[in-house]
Image (cartoon, rainbow, N blue to C red; front, side, top):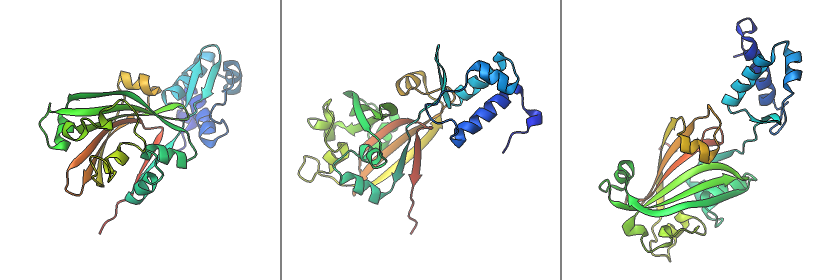
Length: 258
């Protein structure tokens, strides 16, 4: 809905017009906004009003400001995560981890960085998905995913200790083709095929450590995604607990209804 000019505060008019230019692409990602002096002349307002309008755009995650350099349209890598069985198998066939293959298919440069790999007590939500007692030992692989050198996702991958102990899943090293490739490898120690994923999404505001690690601007929510992979016997093989900034991902699900 177009804002009603009669009801706009002066700072909102500044923000609304600049926002429209950003969304239209007139101000491209990385472009520098006009100076405060130029904007005060353009909108016939005070510098304080301009700063308030700029602050609103910064809270919306549309711009970033750098001391002594000015304000810039925020550059945001964006990944569309399309969730279908056929796409999953197609990405797996590339020999890349699924996230990496999806990002590369969209012309981007993905990277995964291991934060830590440890044995820990299963949190209640993780234990529930594995159908084990809370506090039972599990292996967790904590990774940071980046695209074009920008942080995109914090991902904690959980495995039952009886499944992962003594395997690459328990080692602080990246796994060629990703953890799912190792789990499904018919010649490997596990050799169990994934036949179903169930995802639960929770949208909330980020916690301080997430803001720092993912460089999330003020006002941008995150999606907490719990994804459980099951084999044909209905046993959970992996639980991914991911945090993704909502302004950097699009999730698309295809649901086949018999």
